[in-house]
Length: 131
Image 1 (cartoon, one colour):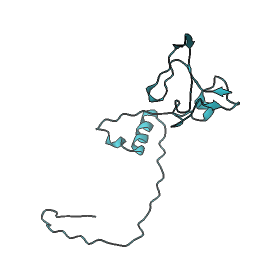
Image 2: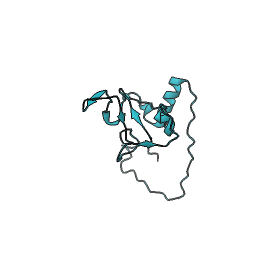
Image 3: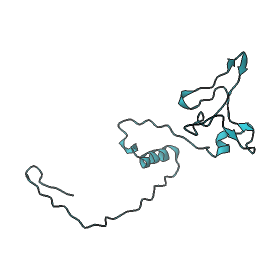
Image 4: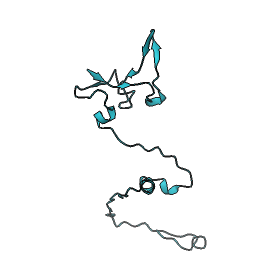
């Protein structure tokens, strides 16, 4: 059977780092991983077993179809334009030179004709109201 192995230097979830250690007098050069330790599951009962077509030495991300890009973004308060997914997409597009594909958002019109009467009790304090 085949399983996922984290070699020394690997960083796993929850701040765990794999190091070369001595266990019961034997040198341990890695760790057999559960799906929980790899961040694939919230609860696992043991080592993650892979099917027989998993290539030895191949990245687990490639084997599981998880090979993707992750951007860790820290925003400062002066970047209100980046406080949405579209804002971040614009910024990444500008930084990388990649084209921006804006989302297609369907417009849904209200189906009711109900109105609410508005009364300005003090028009001097609110000379104009739009709603």
